[in-house]
Image (cartoon, rainbow, N blue to C red; front, top):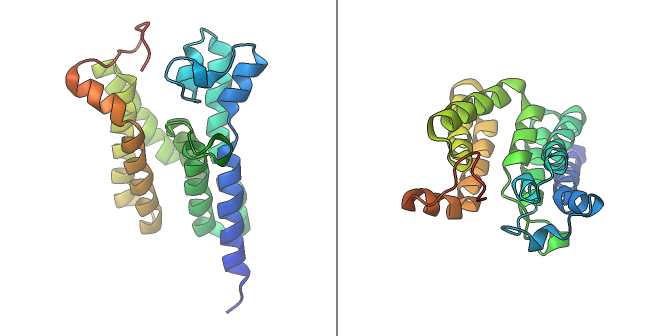
Length: 202
């Protein structure tokens, strides 16, 4: 059997991971003169922590770029070697964001990149995430709980409509989202989590 399919999968994993490791939040915060994001708020490099600096444009730019670093490798890998490569690239980008080698494997919580991966894999998956997030956010006013609910809804929807390989990948990513939000889950259980619109961050 030719090794080219395996090479394509390997390249997809490497490029996906490298794309995910780019710390856009950190770079944007510095470009906006906001200081070292790792020394602000929770120390997280994601858009939520950027928002704590008070700069909505910087937070929006971070959210967009953190999403695109999941979308672009998926689209590129899909054109290169189809769905298997797209899935691998997406998971690798997601892991790269959470465990970036350049920051000693201390990255973001993964939600924005997860959203970007979903966009690359199919707009229906993104729509399910968005609807679940908006519904839970409206009902609970907790952004973290909305993200957790949406990360459950997507693999459930995928289980009935998508390729099993994709569903397995989505289940794995959703489990990791729960792991990165363990602090939020603890605060939710204790009634200490900040609601959407409150000044205190999570």
